Image (cartoon, rainbow, N blue to C red; front, side):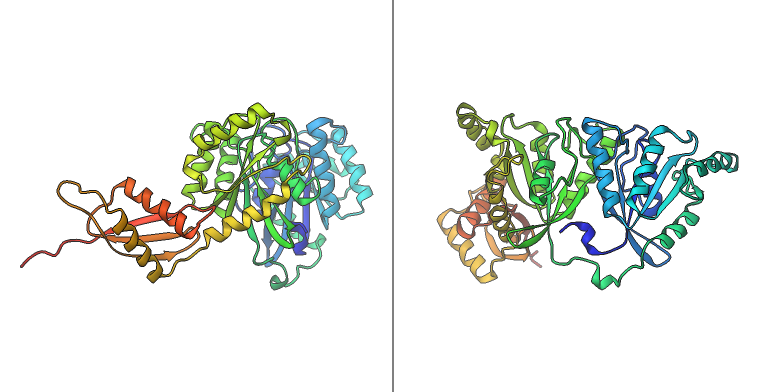
Amino acid sequence: MTTQDTRLPILAVVGRPNVGKSTLVNRIIGRREAVVQDVPGVTRDRVFYDADWNGRSFQLVDTGGWDPDAKGLGGSIAAQAEIAVGLADAVLFVVDATVGITDSDEAVVRILRRSDKPVLLAANKVDDLRQEGEAASLWQLGLGEPYPVSGLHGRGSGDLLDAILAALPETPEIDDVEPSGLRRIALVGRPNVGKSSLLNKLAGSDRVVVDSVAGTTVDPVDEVVTLGGQDWLLIDTAGIRKRVKEASGFEYYASLRTSGAIDRAEVCVLVLDGGQKVSEQDIRILQQTREAGRALVVAINKWDLVDEDRRSFLERELEQELVQVQWAPRINITARTGWHVDRLVPALEKALEGWETRIGTGALNTFLGRLVAEHPHPVRGGKQPRIVYATQPSTAPPTFVLFTSGKLDAAYERYIERRLREEFGFVGTPIVLQQRVREKRKRT
């Protein structure tokens, strides 16, 4: 099952590189979601977005620049665009009106004609009346009337959207559309560690472009897959290379999209390359996941390339570098071949179970009373803070409020967290401890 199985009508947006497809996509959906930069090849996978116009909803799939003769990474991008056309109910073919018809455009038109799908022709970058004459020359493509639009300024987008709705089948009732109850998983990690290979293996198809070039994925890609008899929503994300403040252009927006994907997820799978040292980027992603309060599974990928010497060193390295998330389940996998990928689902289920664990107030205070009796808080400045009462107001992540007679040391907080894990599990989840220091009553 994939996201297009929601049965909303699908419009595929195709065209050669740098004709402004993603800018036009943002204009149609009414928000800045597709990553845009004035460099060819920023979009590489087919990415689904929800859109609506005049009370009708549809899905829009943005694709990478389509050059039918491209090889290597460009060929993979073209293949994703061709798949998108096959899945779509109608196609929006975007041409740069300021450039005119190219050989690549004519080659794409021949493929679109064979698809037997309704095709709308958008003459993009028509920013004023003077350029409408350039748009008229696109009649020569034989796709009917070209719609002059400006993805950047919005000029002509209303007429184009009306034509899109006329070409798409009727939208079903909303109640029949939205998949419900899906557990949301974000695949995170730095570039080129195998996140997209893992998503493709789990999806059972080449859902996203995979290449040895780092940073192939830019937009987060959603895919509904069936694992262990259950549907899961997988979100493949761009590799985070730099701090957001240091990133520029589409890397900056890709970093923001990745942060948004982590916030949307319930559990994150941090993919590490077993053949490389744990990097600063890996630690930063861990911290981001932890601060967002998401459950976590660590997947050591490319295990088939890790020799015996590296394995013994890697174990010590992981113990040292991942000390802040020792509670996260770890699995060793090879996404390319599928080796041990089946271990991911049990690890995810265990992490989500810990993330949603709730302890009754009575059991919690009995446990804390025993803990304080065994190991009381150290005396500081002649005073000894003590825990008066505790409760767990929420889960996902488990959050505890400690009502105390004084401020507890950070080291004692860590001790409480460690004992909570020993007693109740909490595998795969951060724990949030909040203190409420009871104010002393003033004598009157």
